[in-house]
Length: 318
Image (cartoon, rainbow, N blue to C red):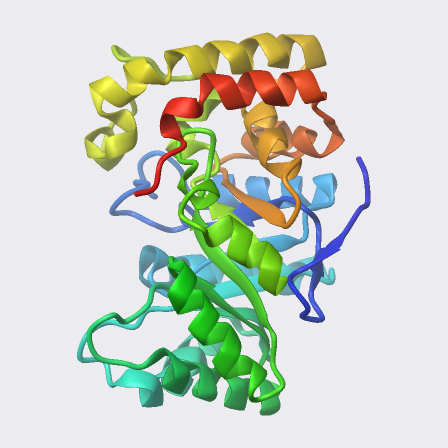
């Protein structure tokens, strides 16, 4: 396993190129924590992360109503390792605007039991009430107070990301990351300007849903979809699953050639893109080990061309 580490933008944070998405760790509503996985699975998954050398964990105050943050904090403290913990603030309408952010951070610090949050992200832009610059001003204050180490955003469009970057720059703070949906089956960052803007501004693109909630693992088909809420998402609509079949077939063929599973190839495709750090969720230690193999894969130019061609249907702005 390679020990390469990369910086998130111009921030002081250096991480393994593959991050761990922790939405499922404690989430009952969507990921059916308590039914499809339990505390032992989370511990096993985390231990597998440590064994694989993965040190970057992404959660949010809204994941499992704070349960995911509790898991991450407890496990991180137990590990004794130098880990990078990212979480997100939810700018819910009526919450109180920028002045509510310090209280939100205090809740995340309490749940994780950590002295500071490494990467604090705005989960989505408030497009109705709160100016982005005012939000960034508060986040810069939190940097100065040593309560967070870096600032990130999530689901920000190009103009919104530029505004955030400019506002932070005025305070001498860099925008570390923009976390957006990006995978072989969701390539809109390549055409909506987000990926190009991230590279121009030296902002790392964190790719969530990198495995399309499991569809890119090759485990599912039109007549075999996951149970629970995932079955009702756009990823598992029959038309999308059917359209994805050629991509899955290509992943299987390349996986066989590299001696890995399809998920590792899907992640390796993202890892090959400069300035992109995929966030791969996992519910078990076996899934973590499967995903981590992507770090040892270097896809050839012809393999990248084949994957790009197979997934061209999803290269559209949304």
